[in-house]
Image (cartoon, rainbow, N blue to C red; front, side, top):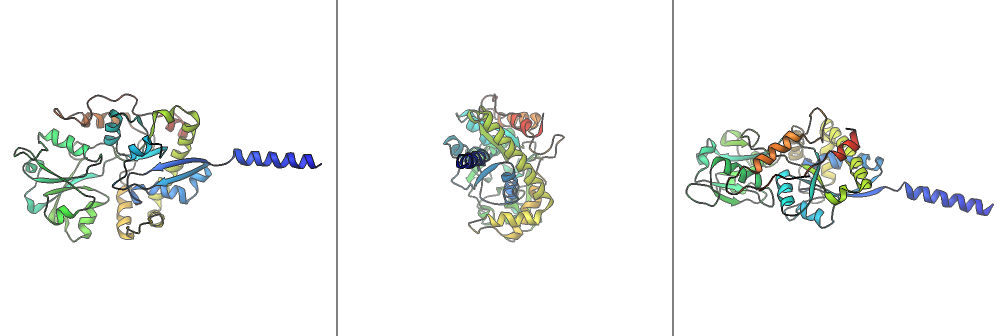
Length: 331
């Protein structure tokens, strides 16, 4: 009898082990904010747990490069912009896009009206603030399309390496700075500037938009069927989290603020961010997260458009896959 009880206990223990949640690490592109609300909501609502995942969400920051993190084994999947991901891939980091959560670009160049800038033709001779660490690539492609050099020469523009704030515009150190529709533009408004004091050039409107906030893993991980299954469960739960976040924005903001360990975010700013982010999410025929091959090709063309100094020098091969999407939602 004792042997039967022990055998039953062993069987229960083995079953429990078999059902243990699979660990997965997600590296974000930036700090905890509504830009990533869907992932925080999915975690808070138990969607990852229900999918059999033990997810670790790693916030980013100015010193965090997602491609370097995953290359060093610090994450299984990362959030990154496609320009920086493809540039990293050409340099040897085998990143692969497994899903595209953001369908539209939120990147823009915001200028002071009193700087004299009214149209892109007015950029010549002006100082323009640009983020680096992989965020500069869309800007460089746009300047190449306009035929403007970025070396500070008289027939080009002077590039100011912009910190992750709006001070250069407030202090008139630059005529224009990089902003996102969901973040820095509103920081300017919150700092006291009026919309009629600003001229905004959205990359979407200028025909130079590239894909942002996609999910990337590596070639090596995608060769493992067990990891593909794990990533598919992660994707399905994440999409569920994003849909909940867009439908319950106030609750999503509260969840984001609960995860802001630095205490740097404010409820008002995050509510604006959540509302603007919702406008960028994928709503294509196959649904959120599905990478449209045409949008991928458009991004590649933009990045290769610089005649003398393109962001990428050759058309990437194997830089995206629908394998994870198909596993999650069916082909």
